[in-house]
Amino acid sequence: MRDGLSHLLKREAMAVGVDVADHGDGSVDLTVRIAVDNGVSIPMVCENIRNEVSYHVLNATGIPVSLVHIYVDSVKG
Image 1 (cartoon, rainbow, N blue to C red):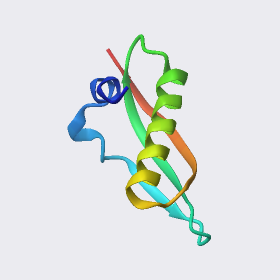
Image 2 (image 1 turned 180 degrees about the horizontal axis):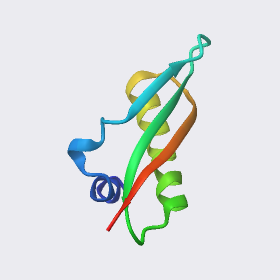
Image 3 (image 1 turned 30 degrees about the vertical axis):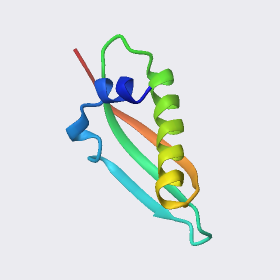
Image 4 (image 1 turned 135 degrees about the vertical axis):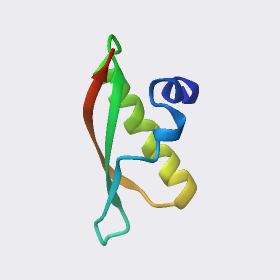
């Protein structure tokens, strides 16, 4: 799945458009802004991003992610 996300979201742009809100209880909310290619399933892409981001943030930092808000800023193509 990681390669699929890298294909949909260009690798160099993956860190752009991410905001973090700290709850103060040890968890965070993330807001991610993305652009997708025309013809992809936006709900499927968003669900995959939510799962991947939550997993990798928890795995890398030990900080649980409460919510991942995803905004599709544009559809290319």
